[in-house]
Length: 492
Ligand code: SF4
Image (cartoon, rainbow, N blue to C red; front, side, top):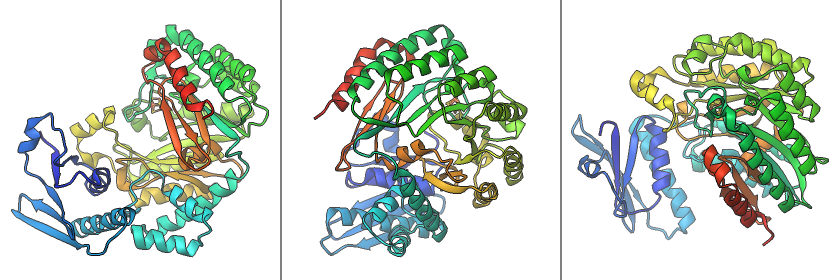
């Protein structure tokens, strides 16, 4: 089994944390954690000698890294004699493992041992608890090894997020997500619920029928609550025809009370799905914010990642949206795309500067196991894609030179360079829904195939309910999807 690396642990403890942290240092590894409780289907895995071992004892923990080629091992030991609470023990173990891996590799990670997707949530909670910026910085740098730059970025963003979310109704309000799981073609790196529209053209009507049923029932469950934001994503919602969009948005207006909605986003996304007619339909139905996402303005990369549209089409789509009256247009770019150099990123940013969008979301490429990109990397070598501090800087400076400030941030597993995704915007042109998804402060009711609803309780507890991903199954099982929603949202 080429590429598989084994970490053996004598206890089934902190498996998730160990996996996340080791993968952060060794992103190319296909890492398996074996504990006494692991059920291993593939017997060959048991024959692979471990690359690492963790040994928990009552008063110490040993972490050993084996080097096959040099036939030697490095062992790191943490003597833990005090009686720590389980939360403190877990944090201290995280610090020990991070420090050991840092020594082993000679590499420091920008976000230290914070491996979760929402670093700003921690900062936001500390701000809400009345902690000073100085104390927060000391905690991030001292307890989690976060770099000074990322600490400053995280605090700046959390403060801005807090100010933006002030206008929302946390307890009496909610946000609505509607997923349209179709795209013109499938991008190489895609890990979302997305199917080529050409294969589903004949059944879009059935999908909308099911969605409308889910909308009706959801509106009933949420009556009496204030709808703060609406986000139609996917997929690419503008894969639908202008008539289908009109049908969907008319149903939305007739079913939900949109009178208090502060933001209404439709992810137009792919330039090859945007037409004047569709943009007109969105405007007529009160959509306030859209995305036109180039990902890169380098044609060779667009061709490689399967976007099947030209750079020129991106420009045209953007300018058509401006002409249609949209004054809040976001653009997404991805750094670390296969074969792209710093010069390519600079050229992309320069072309975006000319268009002057209202917000720019800068993603670091995340290689998902299920994506076609993973296969591409296996064939072309892991060094063929890379994101660096320099390219992050080029994008950040580009955003700042358009008068934008960072307003939300999140991380993903297996991100190129272990960085983050950052949303920048000019004053007042943020995407509230983006912040809500990250900070988990408000209930999000999500409709459509592959969507996940989250109910946030006043005490911060969160319950989730998922819709099935496959479109045919969603249509067939719509009653069950509605029942799941009813169970989650009916008053308890
Ligand atoms: S546009 Fe987005 S959702 Fe559609 S295939 Fe590409 S990455 Fe996936």
